Image (cartoon, rainbow, N blue to C red; front, side, top):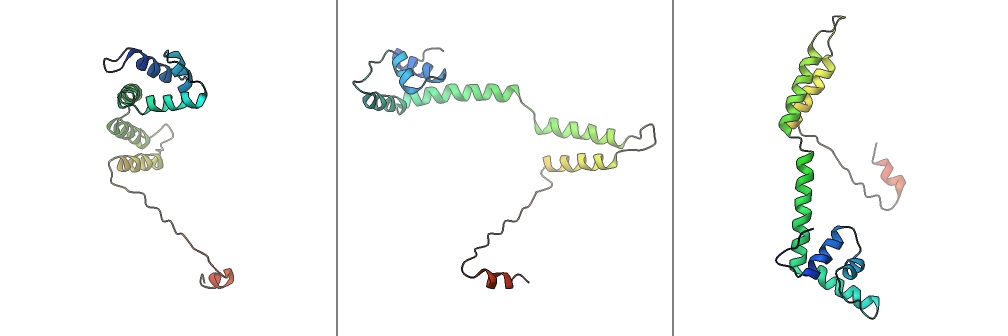
Amino acid sequence: MGASKDLTLKQQKYVDGKLSGLSDIDSYRAAGYVMGKNKNITYVACSKLNSNPKIKLRLKEIKDKAEKKLQKKFEYTKEQSFNNLEKMRILALMVDDNGKNQISAAIKAEELKGKIAGLYVEKSENKNLNINGNFEEWAKGID
């Protein structure tokens, strides 16, 4: 991974280690930092590196770039989905060799198109029942 002009060489090596899957301690060691007399001292040093604004920014930049690249690879827009559903709806309405069509499939495609367009909103109801005290008294109120 490339060095950033805002980071020291050791800091960039630490970032590279973290991005390659190394633990904080292993990244610290791989970057060339001197290990503390005990692990607690090294953990504190790693914590300071992790809270360094320049390191945090560099990690975020690289992760954001990777995420955008992944999103672009699997990009599937609402418009594409809508158009595909329209094609499926048309095919479902076509009469097959037996003189039948698939009206239920066409209706489902139309419904999904409406959901994509924001015409339908699914509603759900969540009732939280607080049952304190006597269950028998509470159950009487259900009738």
